[in-house]
Structures are given as structure tokens and as C-alpha cells.
Amino acid sequence: MARINIKRAIVLLVTGQAESLEFSSFQTWEVRSPSVVLQVPEHIRLTSGNPERQWKLPPVNRREVFRRDHHACQYCGSAKRLTLDHVIPRSKGGTHTWDNVVAACEKCNSAKGDRLLHETGMVLRSKPKAPIHPAIAFAEQFWKEQPTDT
Image (tube, rainbow, N blue to C red; front, side, top):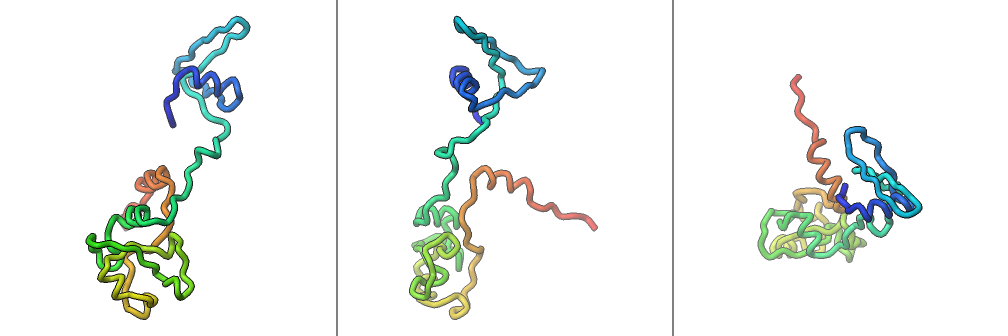
């Protein structure tokens, strides 16, 4: 949802990229040209999306991984001297993807070294996953299951 000016709304309606939403209680504006009289409603809806404006998955880099992991080590919770750690080491076939990279403090990263989690006995605080669209993340907070009384 976004606010746009009336000139942009007219262009979207005339080019067929938007359609008017008919609500009886909302205002419409009458725009006149020498050959056309156009009714511009207060609310319009886009009929097709612009592929350039679609949300793209951010790259796997330090800043984005730290943001996803809330700037905390995924092994001990420390927020000091953070590095990136591959859960499955690259030397053992691990990839540099969202589900294999976590934030780790230097101490935990060096303790884990070039080994798998079950070899070290270390446990991740949360399962690494790719970030989701910000609008979906916002909506999910309202859809969490509520405890039921039985």
C-alpha cells in the first residue's frame, strides 16, 4: 500500500496498470482534457507488479548474517568479536548459503574449528535460514499460535 499523487494515478489508470476500487463512501475526482473526461477514484489497485520492484533475497555476507542472528553468537550468545562460521565446514562440502552460515564469537569459532557440530558437542541456538520478506515477517507476529485453555 502506498500513497501516490493524482498525476501518477491517472497514468496508471490510462495505461491499464491499475484499476479503480469502487467504494461508495470515498471521493472521486473528475479530471478533464479537451477530448476525455476521466473519473479518478480515491483508491486504485495495481493490476500487475513491476518485476524490478520485487523483494530480492539479500546476499550472504557479514552484515546480513549478523542482522539475522541479532548480532549474537549462535553457540554461546556473546555479542563480542563476532565472526562467520560455516556449520558444515567448507572443507567437508559445506556451502556458503543462508542455511549453513551463522554468527559465532572468535572463541566458539576456534573451538569448533574444522569439525561438524556432533563432533564438538556444540548446539546451535536457532536453526539458520534465509531471511523472509519484511512484510511477511511483520504479519507473522500476529499469526503466532496462542495458548489454548483445555
